[in-house]
Length: 470
Image (cartoon, rainbow, N blue to C red; front, side, top):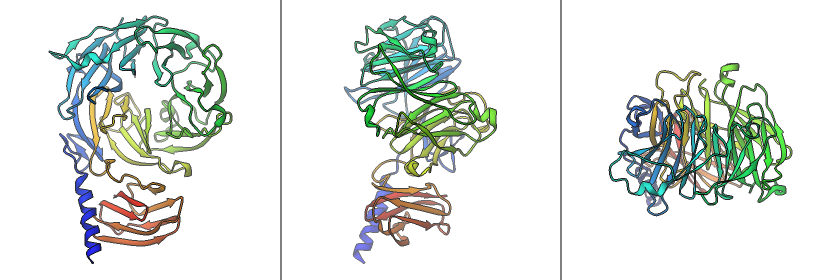
């Protein structure tokens, strides 16, 4: 009896310890008028407050000196820098104006405490900005100047950086047929042209990694995955003077091959097609490719989302896929069981309340890589900062090692799949009361249809994980 009480109190304490304070909590699926599930609103800045008529892409920087976090946000007329170290009272520090004209397309990435910025504006080139200057801004908002400039290309749609190799890649430029334009940025204030790759069509976006995935033929090689309008190209760019195509792959119902991202084990590649929802009329579609063999990639399956919104940029952190959908906001998808072709939406924050239809770029980007859990959202609706609340926060016991629990949230059935014997399974409510007990081998389906909606904990000998009953 004492053991049961102790366990119940322990679980109750863990639940209560997950609670966080936010400026506007997500309650009854709403935060200050924005539809939400599992994510609280921290703070917002409109485009007008940054003296801009359009907000587009975004990235982030964490100061290695003090751990302060900053959002870098693209505007039609420059790049905004926002101090988010106090997430419920962020500070707009100022703007680096565009190098030439205005454009709704601007992109920024970070390497070694420097921001590298490109734009579709004619003659813009690549701006270089020393981010350590943000440590001491006396009277924000300031107007900044660039620290260096690269003019090896004019306009560029996007910029990609491999922080391990110290190379930047301009894509969608007027050079190399729109293919990746290589720039050595190991000395950030002295960017040096390093060639390019003109095969496989125009590159709209790309991811470049120093490969550590399952295909041992390419271990340690620098691999580019190009989202090239009507195909995905896998290219070995280790030798900048001799880039080599590894393979290309297409897929059914192509609209416009837009952007993709590896899972962290580099086995799967999650691709978004920007026009397919408009052209073919289905819900938001993510194409999941199996890249276990880079010479022979194949389409593993297609994930269809919960609404018809047009998808834009998506990124993977751990077992979560953070997807920016134009009119449906940030959608957060559990990919812990992607190996078995299971993906489940577990949360969202919708920056465009009127509808989730196909349409214009209300939400352009999501940046989910801050250690604090702060997530930057950017697009026509401005800059928005959100964070997972107590139902989804990754503190303490977000996932049981070696056990997949899905779907989560769930309405009727929760499935547990493990790489070993699970043993006894106990489900506890928020009061610490045991409401379900089962014995399982390596797979079990647990009926939770009789439980009330809310937060529950699934306890096994392998660990404890939170689930949400819809």
